[in-house]
Image 1 (cartoon, one colour):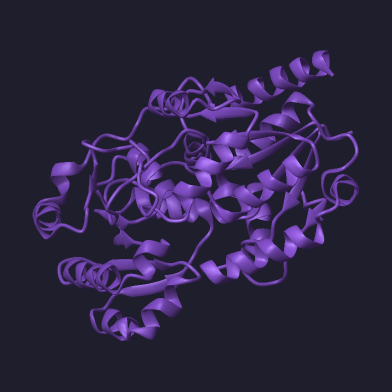
Image 2 (image 1 turned 60 degrees about the vertical axis):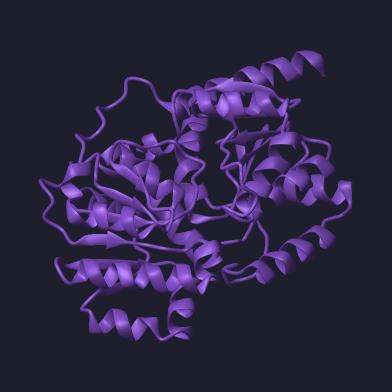
Length: 368
């Protein structure tokens, strides 16, 4: 019997929800995995790497959802085909489900929340309470967060700032504070075999956010920055699915090749975390990567105007704000921003979330 459904579909969701799912297994709580299909081409590899079961239900097609028009069409098509409450319970969520886990701020998060509410089920939001306080930075993530946080019944907040944000929103759901983000558990698992010694690898750069890919100034500025780094140290550009076409469209892939940048696709999470740990510096616009670098202490330039995450800020993470002076200061002395890696925590965010899920199932059972 599966009382819980985990409804996820992106690479980051798999990585950051896996510690919770393993915890549910250890606690003897049955769960049903539903894959939204948002990152369809990566999902099987991710499940194998993270030792997760195959999904009971897989929605969507065979390709990844990599643009806003694709996301809108994908969500409308799925929502339209699953509009019946009876069909949702029978075909997607299952007859015994009492709680649906959703994660973060992606189109999969919004779709899962709306379908769960349509089916009359309770929603638990992992990584709740993050706010940039700007609807355009990041877009559409900030808007999705606001909708999901208002619809969720249980909200797992990773820090006190997130708790305060939820209180300011006057959400109706129950707020549960947990000791950090599950990326902590994921990084610990990725480095179980040991952390690389020293900064012996290349610089690592990544970019994938809508507000960067669809703004020529932000995209061109990022490539300018990567060229500057490549002029002084080996540089590795790990390319997300939508990033490659955006670079090629503006001829920026040729510039990167001419600069000697090593350009390659996404790699398994454990390999990527070890590459971050060995990097002299990291440039990224990814929120999850910001969290990982904060734990690793690696000098990191965050290519964004705003961030919803406090992780590493004013320590090893510098928010670029697309400001040339900020970029120049970071590149002039990256080691100034290096910090010791975070000590292994005695508390696990994933374990705290599992405890919260068990408590919620008990509470809702008493009230049913």
